[in-house]
Image (cartoon, rainbow, N blue to C red; front, side, top):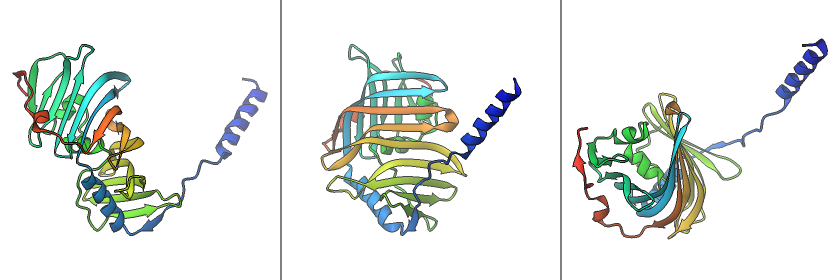
Length: 257
């Protein structure tokens, strides 16, 4: 490389280093109790969800898209996720009745009864079923915050609540909601354990349905597993009655765990 080219290259590097980074809006610490109460009120306002979605799972450079997925939530107590093929046949199903999880893997008639690790077998990441149930409705699981819990708000009215439970810290970003029965909307949630990020959930494209602001796109990221799960609802109904039949045991041949 000629000297003039080297000089030009160094000049570009120096100039790029001098470009100021976009500064984040400053936040001021505020009392956490009102925001925690608002998060709890939002959780209590949500009763159920029934919807269909497009689900994309990307892991370590590979991805799979499920075009027709039915999702049923009974609060954060019960969950059913079922993918259907082009002819309406069930290709994958997961049912959690609040105690036991059942899983029927793709292209199989075998039903696996699992413990809390069932989602790890399906997704390859250690997401607890309560976490997934909460995230699919734009919520967080019920928590018992300690004295270490803090809250910070910025001039744009967005706030961050840090919920501390021993070595576990959850950072919840909230903003004002448009729903009549809610004061806030959760835009993201991050879960840390011993300082390491376990997963991040982002809640996008909110719509107000039955006075509840539900995200129509949920993105869950597990950096350690290089996993991204994107759920894009195309139809969704909130707080409509959900019957027990949605959470009946799966039909199929029992398989070893």
